[in-house]
Length: 74
Image 1: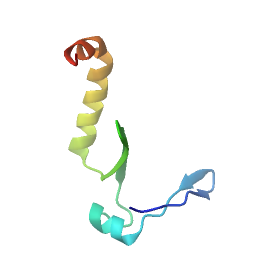
Image 2: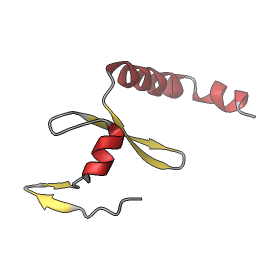
Image 3: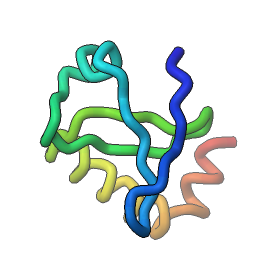
Image 4: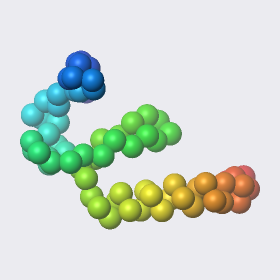
């Protein structure tokens, strides 16, 4: 577990990831990461264009078919 402090950077906010977290994510300075919200909280993952495209498709499908998905979930 990592406890991070949110700091002001100009008009934005930022957190600094410890080197252990960067190593586990397999990212380094200058790489892009993705923050997604899930049922149990937020997730940070390395940027993967395929994953981002899949999430966009999911969001569109979820909106268009929310009633059908709700019924299927019962």
